[in-house]
Length: 175
Image (cartoon, rainbow, N blue to C red):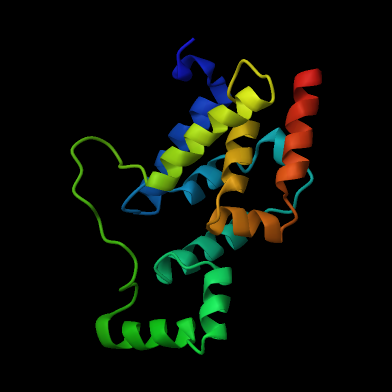
């Protein structure tokens, strides 16, 4: 069975929706944050408090800071570097959003960030590790939680853990 054939209809739709999220947000590439926004309504996330507007704000802030997470900013603060002050100064001198990546040249469609591609690869591993013969949204979420970036950070802050999603994914298969 080819990888694309393993994707459930919901997982395929999530990937397409992630591209739409990136396009609507005028992003340079499709990132993992777009993938999370695309799967917010998934049953595996039922019961978690994941307000879309809060997530979008966190993602905008992340992009504004050139990809630094809160953990990164805290580490730099520990070294005496105030990231917010540095960004504020740079934006006053060079313009708002100066640290965000600009549009990249593309030949076909929307380019995918490396982390996006890695999340899809890891979702396949998650599916195999659980003994599933399909790749669903739950596997995509598990892969997103494995990452070290903004998506894993915002999910963890909202008590969405790898262990809980894995438990839900395993029990979904049992039904």
